[in-house]
Image (tube, rainbow, N blue to C red; front, side, top):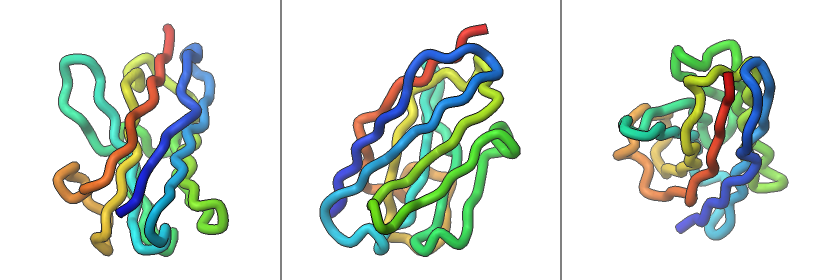
Length: 124
């Protein structure tokens, strides 16, 4: 089992940047692929970005491609989501999730472990 704790959310103006961090503890960090999802009020939780166990592959939702960058630091058991050129529609609670599955999946059903979430608010 792995425990996940997100940090780095906040309020930012449109066009600004934030960096979200997800710290993992528990069983071996390298055994898990990691992803970020987000959920805005009244909407379903959606995939944002994912990274494989080795960090060799990443996938992004079309809505964030070219603006968000996901990376992992195995030495620190941490995943970082760098978010640039933020838009008001990026406003949501962002969740870090982990899966023992090898490939990156867009469905939340593949991720049994979740953090508590961190709020990101982008003002226009």
